[in-house]
Image (cartoon, rainbow over all chains, first blue to last red; front, side, top):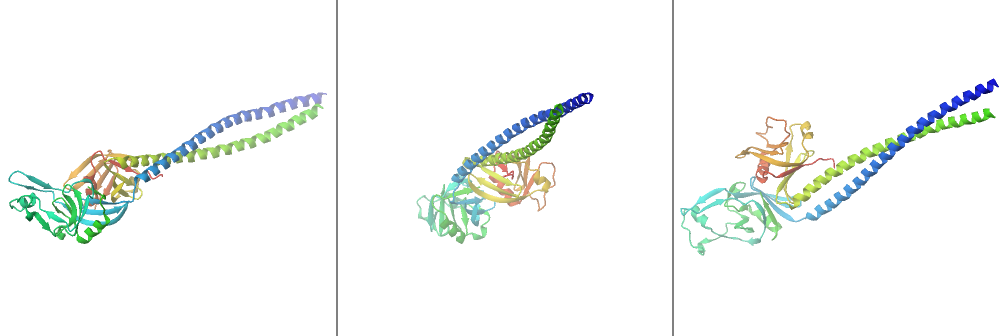
Length: 215
Length: 176
């Protein structure tokens, strides 16, 4: 009897101890479950955000692709006297050019002209073969010659602009030159001049509407 | 009888003891996996955000009437662009790899242009990046801790006269 009672008491104590441990593990387990659930929610939120960003970026890339094209364009670096023919981001040809002298000519009457290649974005408005130079007033002033009337045939000069010209507007052109030794310097009256072979290549590559970026 | 009941209960407790550690192990593994996944996703989201920042920058400048720069600190190359057109490509150097890593990233604004007569041309962006031309083939002596990029004089010449104060540059993050 006594033994049975002792055994009963021992069993009860043992049972209580063994139940206490699972309880604490259970409460820890409950905390772990709550943490895992919160973490799972964060992961899901990040997955959603990543998917949304991927979609948005894809849309942006598509939009940018539509804004790009494969057209040829011309870039003129006036500081370094280089003209580059490009298609997309590729260089097709780089050419040494002459650009505006940044000199000024002044007439006694007070008229003056500053010779600089204009900066900005232009378009090839026309293409000319065997272009003719119509001498402007400053070319007479520059040589201390009297300025003839506007319709004077003396103003028409052939063979000084090369075989081709691309008209940019405002009196500016891309054309050839007799002064090939001066290419790579600022010597023109604002136009962009180049060697004959380069001129032919650029003329043939460009079309009316080709963009020209001068900086 | 009582002893049998007691033995049965003890056995059940022992079994419970054995299951719970196993359960705790499994929960730990799940937690580790989720934490790793969270970290990976966090990095991915950051990468995507940076990519979007650059795409939005490009989209904005494809429509603006303004030239801008894109600088790649990894390949040490840069581009002068106007809308969707590439005007010029150039290379640059940094004084050290450490300085290359310290380069600011993202959008910068041209705040100052220094130099005249093609000498000692300097472009300062947002007070946090300086572009200078090489001087006599040597890199200029540093007077401040602002990160610097050095370009060939001819390239610096082009950029100096092409960009206006207020113009933008984008330094690539290279995480995407």
